Length: 391
Ligand code: NAD
Ligand code: MG
Image (cartoon, rainbow, N blue to C red; front, side, top):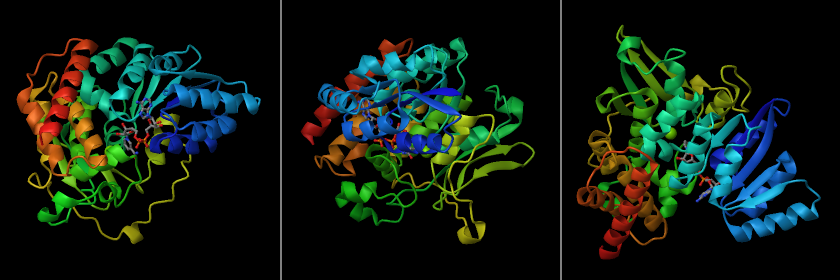
């Protein structure tokens, strides 16, 4: 029996995780579920999975959930606030933490889980983008098992040698080929991008996801964040990672070896596959995902990314090369710009402009500890807000 905490259980990754867990009730026990403010959905999940703890970030939502739990006669302790997210992630009875909160809010509880030596199923890529060295040091120091859930990184993990030691060349790897769908605006005339709406940006052709990552996919910032994520997970330099646009999203990424072999992981675009892989590793379990029908796929296309259309991708490579606090600055400016776009305060094309202005304005410092990261994050958020007010 694996004892599990699902951080962000009401989100896209969270609900997919619980879907897989429900298929294997004898294998997993839910210790804690957490969410921001969706009390109704968290309550339904509590009824189904009977965790010991339920955490709502929002105090009012926690009060509402506590009431429902009491009326239903469930023995669940309802906690609230950001500290409670860390508290449940480090409980002694917890084996595994699914890190599926969106954005910078996921950093502290995920880092706490790493420091406590938990097995981490990492969906929250922002943790690695912001604080890659701090997080990876914590993973190494505690001996945590770290399993990437992001579909591309999960594919790369599967295509690398078992027990890969962070030495690409030593393992005969020439490059990592990171696939990207290109999102909903891959073929939109450039002149039309100025007026695209949040609804259009969130209508991804292949994946159903939360709104923030959907906008990131439309701008290809998501791929940029994933390049930085791959850097930390696999100890790969910016020049070792090639982004390949593959609109069908059937190949989830590839590893090219020096002998000319290229190993890929394929499957239908359904996050339950990497989630099930992470949950059961090193075994395999049914994920509820339909078999891949290659005859239906019939054809796969590959094109180079268009950096003029997708300046966010170039900005992410720039931040990775600049190192230090640059990726944290990039991430924070992006979160603020995406939120402003979703609120219809700025246009889609302003997202990269805001991020670039913030990267230009702020100094890049070395990262020694979490405070360095949080300092840069706060400064970049303020600079991005100011940029948006001026625009
Ligand atoms: P989502 O918006 O659907 O869900 C986010 C979850 O986090 C919700 O449960 C929400 O209640 C919780 N949350 C939001 N803000 C919070 C806060 N401030 N404090 C505590 N909890 C908070 O997001 P998602 O699409 O499931 O993505 C989650 C993470 O997984 C992101 O980092 C994303 O980049 C990554 N990811 C998602 C997918 C996908 O297919 N959805 C694929 C790869 C990686
Ligand atoms: Mg991905």
